[in-house]
Image (cartoon, rainbow, N blue to C red; front, side):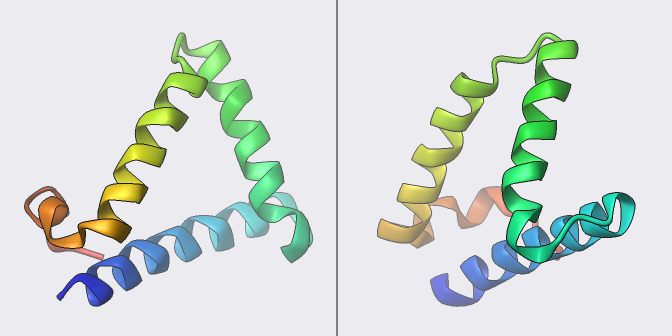
Length: 79
């Protein structure tokens, strides 16, 4: 069950990166870095703590990879 859930998470990220590439025309090799930088700008302008949210995201990622079944309740079931 955990591998499909993580595959769904990665598929959602692919959709976001494809939309970003369409909107910006960025090259595939630069898309992730450019999107992250733009998200940093967005967070700064909207009062979010990007570094803190990144740390929390990293904790979620680690838990989903190391203990994947522990986060299934929060996934919502949709792609």
